Length: 425
Image (cartoon, rainbow, N blue to C red; front, side, top):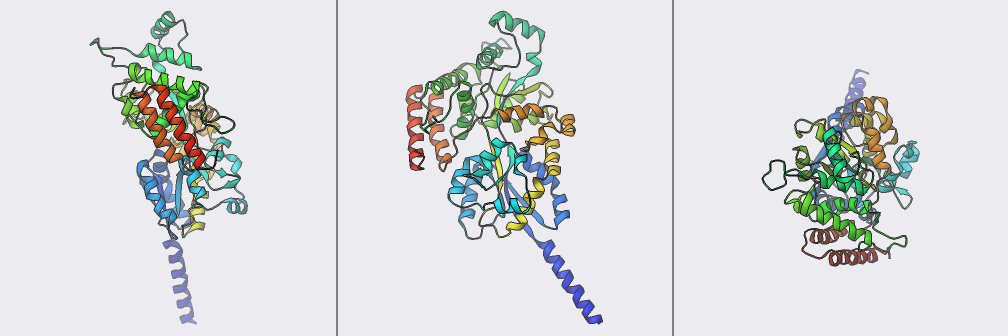
């Protein structure tokens, strides 16, 4: 009997050790929401006995690192986050596990998510492949101390005939961009700028210029799917973009990406910037900003670009159930709320009006407005290739290396060719 008890104890120990030895590997981007989740990991590990290894890398390396693992019969990652750029490519290649059965089995209410985000990184052709993790919709940040300054208000009114306030249309905003661009030290060169352009080729300019397109009432596609990159609205958007680089943005901004543009505003050298809403918390962080308490956020006139990442389980994952358990934990309201309290970019509607969060982050209702008015970027099998080809033409037009009409016609032709290749036209 004593021997049986000993053996039972040994088997129980081995079984428990086996459960505790389980480890899931996750590939994520190095963004604030990833860091916030890493801080909360001990809660999941203690609750489930599952260890978690998060590999966080820069965006530019993620796609290259992911694809070989997704193709393999057994990949290195049990769970990944997917940028909306890759949704069409990854689902068409059948690299992602459909989640409908798990959602139904565990009674997960996907209606808690903002509908635009479920459409962007949730459902594809009626099938749920992902649950939205965080959003990076683009918004306008501005110097609220300047916009509320009585002297600036009086001077702006005298010069433009407009009231100086948070702009709600493009005319108001562009007058402000012109007004706040100035030579503060009187050396003959502007050293304070109305806006900051992010003109680097590829997704930096493609995403940033999109906000100018939406502000002109433009779209990427007509109702019949035909591309509209050489439309009057697109050409007008590029004319404003080119003018901003030449007159109202720092020298060299044609090669800026998001971090460089953030730093110009954070150093106190610009009035406004259209950027990802996840960057906003950084302006109130003394470690990264000299304008703490001086920055406001508002929807981009005409709406800003809608962006998000979603949780997905690769078909090549060897621990799908454990990965699903992690998704359920990370997307529970308790953990989503904790991430928001730390400054994250939530995807669940209720969070934007949670009283506890509003006490800590009173600007969250504005983020809800930003998401409500967000505009769509092309998402199809060849979005990554589209960004590179069209981004090149946008940069050439913005820098004057090509005439605007020539570059936009070339961009439109390249876009249409990819749509035909994908069977969209």
